[in-house]
Image (cartoon, rainbow, N blue to C red; front, side, top):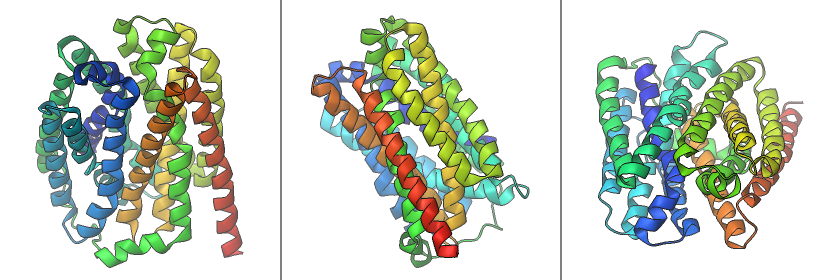
Length: 379
């Protein structure tokens, strides 16, 4: 579990550190900050493309070998980011870095769930996801601080080192997973014919976008709106990460008690918190509290969505589990894009929170339809 979580730690660090370093990347590459936000979207689109392709094409590959190869690709993508000479090559490197993301979490989550005691699948999935949450407590603030003081490229160098450490940890500590059922590409692609899989993915793609609309531009929001010194931004990023850890644990517990209820509660809470962040962002203390709550409500949603997809995917669980992270990164790309649009339109750095609240409300409405459809089909 620790070896798998270390991979999540590296993935979480590279996914979120770009947001903390957007001003630095924009200045170094001589582009505007909303344009620099395309680096976040490029990574997210890599996840969207890589998750279904890798999950389907590698359906027959032994799971441990697949995990190792995914981390090798992840490490190479981040190394390419370090040496990217232009903004265009940076976008390409971020896209490549994102390709293994969804498949890694999908396979790791299924492996954890298959080893978990009865009634504790969501907690096992949350344990793997804990690396992603912990990245926002240690990895992202640390890499952001390093990037601010030594240069943004050094942050991605640290991520590449974490990738190498993960490869060694998986090879040494993860069992061969011989009891893990492999399938075929056609079987996995069958997930795309299941309405409940597609609806659940859409819920994540829409409802989760609010967190990213805010977090993508959190650095400038904190400095220009809340009046926080740039040197203190990593502390707020750490609060966001602590919120993710708390939300991840709570979300896992709630999902084991009732998956649908856990998803609904998380998204309603997210809508309320994001709407409140519009006012909270004007003060350093309330902005820090708001960042904690944004992270908590967002992370609380993930275990429920992952578990629900495993429940409704039948024999196509690998693709469904991987597609969960593709959906969440569609939310990442859409949130960053929509947040950049309202900022570029002159509405200010609190406007993304309102956009995010609207996305969360849309997610609640879509999930209500999803549950109603599922109950109607079984009645």
